[in-house]
Amino acid sequence: MYYFSPTTSGFYHFKLHKKIPNDAIEISEEEYNKLMDGQCDGKHIVFLNGKISLQEKIESSEEIKNKIYKTLEYEMKNYLFVIKGYTESTQTSLQIISTNTKFPKKTRDNAKRILEWIIQDVLNYYYTKKEEIMNSDNPIDVKWDFNECEKNAPQFSLKNLLK
Image 1 (cartoon, rainbow, N blue to C red):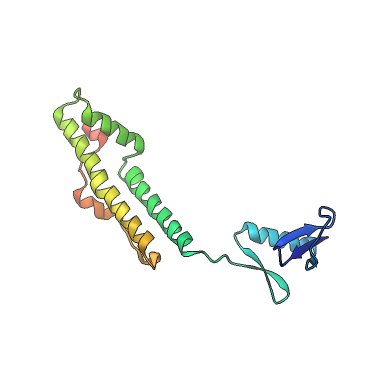
Image 2: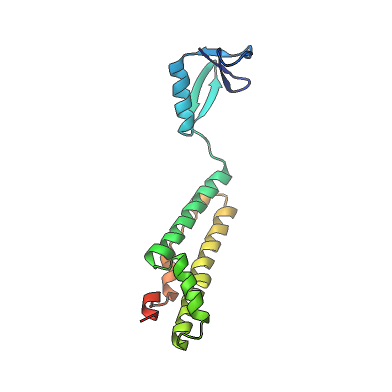
């Protein structure tokens, strides 16, 4: 047999717990499992008007901002790594090429142009939008589109540089 205590918001089992709070309410194993499943799904267990129930979790403004920020971060990485093909390892290669005098000057300069575009356009856009989200009273209204970075995007890739 399971018990739920409104004062501790805890569950108790008569075989596991020697002391069960006085306000504990007896619940069935089926009800206990339902409440646990709901909690695993992100819901909160609440005790209102003498009844135990599940409610959707109400997110704080910081949680909402962090979720939106994580979406922004994902979309920036998708744009840079997948769409443009400038993965972290590609960026490392560009850094090496841009400073290695064994490569022709034009190749080094083009590698620098790509890196400058990533920093000045893409990352600057990303950090501007992140700040907008974090400082906004209504972060859900902050919109972005990484295609806005296209206007200054170099028209060549690492593969083109090494041909």
